[in-house]
Image (tube, rainbow, N blue to C red):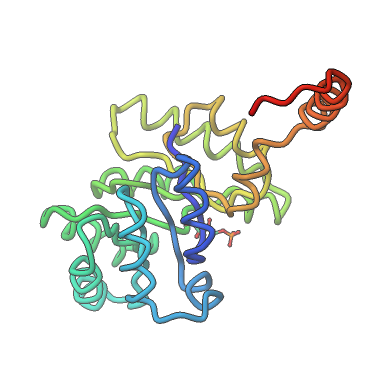
Length: 217
Ligand code: E4P
């Protein structure tokens, strides 16, 4: 399973990339606003740090506008993935941009039927938002299982990019289902390394090591 980080915070991206944990990055207009930086400038910087796909989202709602913005964003770097919303115009833009060789991430997916449409439009990635479904008391992970089954039934190669990830459990469930990618905030990705028994083990090993009076260097 590939790991993308869901942030526009360049320091966090660098930190995770240094740990060899990053296969890509997703951003959205809210994350860009949170960074307080100029959109294209921050995307260019991220694309230099991470070789994999870096999603940059269009803000136009009509087909022609999405194509214009998508083509402009693609000029920033080869690994820019144009992110379009799951609307009919978004699907049209997806099809057209894919025909021109762009990577496209279709975002804001909340149903299996929407995911089916994105695959038919040739999306490189479909982004189902599990956390936002959980927020309204639906089972976000159930949607991932449904999409996996549908894509496998028909051999669609659109990658399932599990988004709106809030917990380590979301990531484990996504891996068990066989999702292709998860995108999660930096803290959630870093949290995967944590276990109280790991901390306890380090503590007791170091206490015993101290008793030996030795040092490695
Ligand atoms: C995905 O690409 C989105 O940027 C993101 O995962 C949304 O997450 P949120 O629901 O926590 O805002």
